[in-house]
Length: 479
Image 1 (cartoon, rainbow, N blue to C red):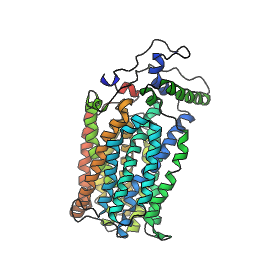
Image 2: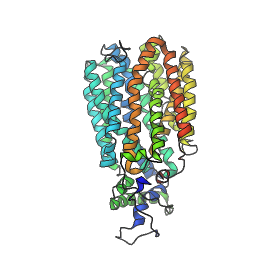
Image 3: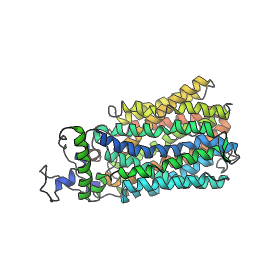
Image 4: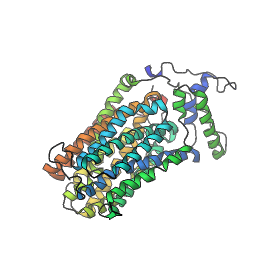
């Protein structure tokens, strides 16, 4: 295989002479990781990464919740005068996703080049600083510019966390690890929704409530920088850079911790797969990755319409249906309580069912619940259908985050996932304007018909083109 050219081959021995740089040691990194039991030390790494994901989603999703406050303050308008107007809520959403697009497509390689740990840290600090500046803007131009800048950091962080997670989690718990990560991450939804409900309609200490929502997230996220010191570099990444001694040292420390908690000797590693040490952008266009790349591009263009079309617009959609700003924020707070439940429910199925089948089923649920949501004004029905949409969207989210990381080898994982993921960001830029246009001319029903069409294309792309990955090592999937 092209991406495995120059990779270490397998040796015949299980152990090496001390000090000998054996071929077995080079090839066995993934096998040693995949045999680790799900002990406290392993879950601690997952939780530490998940803390970063919490603040990332807080930052990503407060867009929709503070939008009514931005409109109330006169900085933005609910709809645009033209399709691509720059003074409406759509331009604010588009600025974020423009930054996400550039961050993922142009900067995804950073984690492949400089390591998962360093980029995880610095991209977080980047968007915290940008959002702090954004919180003090009074014009649509300033607001949109700094939202774009923060989007650059968030885009890099999204790719890095997923890559980091997939390489540290053993294969038998990779799906559950992503489920837990997303459950912790999506607990940011009720938090930001509740804070918005309390703060957005009011002012404190001379600052509008929406500014406090932004500042609270940034100040809190800065604490992740302190906790990140306990995260090791990815042994798989170190091995892909031929830094085998460092990879072995990191893994040996982790194995010692796990063994002390496991209470008995660790199980022997399974068959070792060769570790790729060369790879480039062109490899994602060679078999078997070409078909996967095309599939994920199509998937990301349209899944974004379903997920962010609801998450970023639900308060505005409810206001458009005649519900007051305060009531719409209350409803979305209740709906937001379901956000972490989706991944927690997914935890029960994460490593039992194929990822592609879960995505297809949840996309179908999204279509049905969305069309029903557009036809109701009952508070109970709004909340119930909103919960269904939230659960379906979040189960899709944690599943595809695990799935796309599995489809590429270590040497190109971050840049390849960054490239395909960037299409979702480009889609979000244009779909936000299209949704604003649909809302203006066709109402809430038109918005959800548009979303339903997009989710049908998600079903076709994943259902017809997606490979199976359940229970396989990352290296085995890349063969």
